[in-house]
Image (cartoon, rainbow over all chains, first blue to last red; front, side):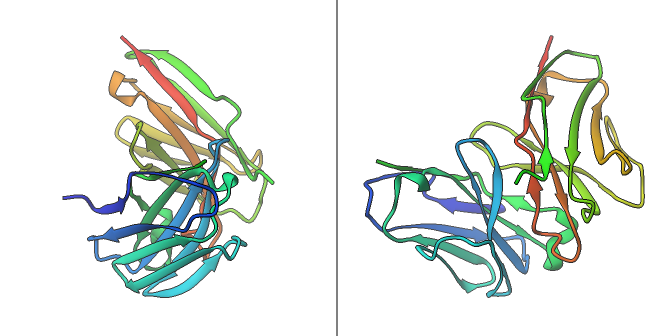
Length: 114
Length: 113
């Protein structure tokens, strides 16, 4: 039973489109995250939510809008996709307060913008 | 601005020998350090961590060493096994936002029989 699951695994789309990535965790964690791994392999935090409240917004373009309907779900909606948005997006969760840095990651969504 | 650096993109080690992966950081406010392991097509998984008040933490075959004065940490795997072949990410964090991790670019470890 997957602890942090995100869909879809692969997403290929045209520039200008709007797309969403969904994430769910069944660990009972209070905090969820979106991380982005770019073409240079750097993993960088985008957003963090604690119990449905936005905690971290790491200067991400406002075309990216996270939504947390409940503490087990954190979705990422991206408007007007650009070539530079191509990356792997990882959802993660942790116990409240960051779990001493012990994050549980999903398997990633490979986004390719053509 | 790269605050966590892993300068070796790859490391190849024979099975049974020691693997040493290195990591440097620049931000003196970091006080918690972690190693994550990543297999292809999977997300990173937590491996081991160390607080800045310690200089060593051991968990089975894995030991992390921290040298605060040098802003350097290393992960030792002894003995190395083929199943250890993966990308290893070093990460750092400063309280209170312990969930905000700063990652290095990773080191691909290959353990050959």
